[in-house]
Structure formats: structure tokens, C-alpha cells
Length: 312
Image (cartoon, rainbow, N blue to C red; front, side, top):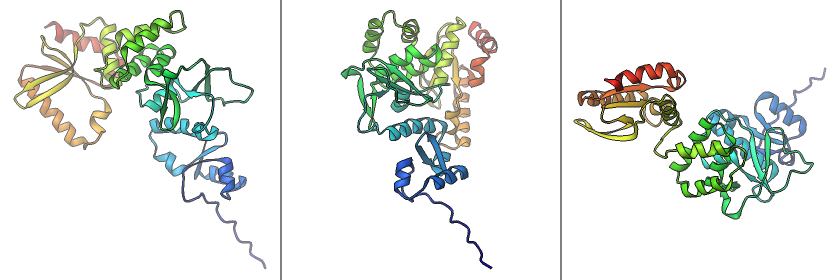
């Protein structure tokens, strides 16, 4: 009696993590093997004709996955060496490392002429516009728009609060406000220009996180007197920097975003330091109000917590 040996399990190459279909075929991984690897989760299909090693994909944070999708598109279309388009709008923003909040993973391209019959893919938005030489940049080998052009494009495209978060960060990273204002003036009459101008008028490079930007916007919309951001205060325990402060009232507003508790240092140490910091501020006569992400979307509660303290 002849015993049939089970077919060997298909294997990925030992090196690399991102491949086009043809690259896998050239490495000896046949179409059936590719399908089996995808079914087992060893290989993840990112887009038509482009795959990533599953173990690599699973380690990525949502932000890194969004960035990887752009690189997968670039790898699939070989845009690192040639091509007529540039990554723009939120895709350029991701490549530049700008803060994005509640933004989808669609890939945005800008090219001078409308796309031909060749399909970019359902997840790709192609914008038809000229990108001047002064608006061109290279980021990690990929052709993109500059920081200023990216911020302007996103200000025209995104809803106000999303655009404000991005613009705050662009200015913090060094975007030239004079260039931004000049571009807004040049685009008079364009769709989204009112939103862009409103964003530019409210943008503040002192904002250090999306949460701080949204907190500032909530305060403005509730017509609460504007606080001063990033205020340094000297206490008996040393110098501290407050997210927001109404100095005359000695009221501080602190945004407790996740990053304050989970980046770089153990949670217990950060919490202990925050308690010591708040104790020192309280002893010096400060009232400290702490808010979290959820508070930014409960505006009545936010107002009722803040106004009585400011009115004292």
C-alpha cells in the first residue's frame, strides 16, 4: 500500500517583507503557494499584486500600517524610480509624519494630467493639478509634495478640526506661515478655501498633540476666555510646564492623552510624577483640571467644569 506524503507547506523567502507578485514568482513561490500563504495569514495581501509578511504586518501599529500601505503602493507601481505623480494630501502628510485624526487610509496622488485608462485602484484618489518645482519633495525615497503644499492641500480637503490638528503640527515642524498665507491668497475662489483660511487663522504651533488642538478648539467654540498654551510655572519642587493656563486665575488645564502615560517610561513612574507635580501646583495656589479624550466630546460637561473655576 502506497502512502501519499503530504505536500510540503509553502514557505516565504527568508529575507525581505514586501513583494510584488512577480517577485514571489521569481523566487519560486507559485500562485497556489501564494494563495495558501495568504489563507494561512503568513502572507498579507495589501493591494492588488503586492504582499507583506504577516508577522511584520501584525507588529505594526495602525499608524505604521497606514504608512505601509503607501509604501506597498509605491512598491507595486515602482514609483521610487519613475512615474508622473507625487504622493499628496493625507498620503504626503503621513510620509511627512504629520498628525492625522480620524482620516481614512485612501492613497492620494497628484499628477498634471487626468489618469489614463490604467486603474490606480479603488483605494487611490487621483488629483489633477500641477506641482511646481518649489512644491516638490522627496521623503524616504518617495516623491511627495512639500510640507507647506501638503498642509495647504489638506486644509482644502479635510474638515475643519482634522485640518487644524494637521496645520498646528505642520507649523510646529517648521512650515513657513508666510508661504502658507501666500498660497491661501493665491487660491482665492477654490473649493475649500474658506476652511483653509479659517484653519490658518486659528493654527498655533505651540500645540503639542491632537488632544491639545481639539481642547483649544472646544474652548474657542464655547466662548470661554482663551488660555495661554505651554505655560512654565516655578514651584518649590521645580519648574513645570502646563498645557494651558489662565495665569491671573491660577487655573491650569491639562490634557491626559494616552501618550503621556505609555510613551517611554513605565506607567507607575509617570503617574507618581504627575501626582507630585499636581501636589506642588496645588500648594502654590493653582487649580488643576484634567481632561481626557472623552471630555472633548462632552462640551456641556466640559463647560460646567471649567467656568465655575474661572468665575471664582
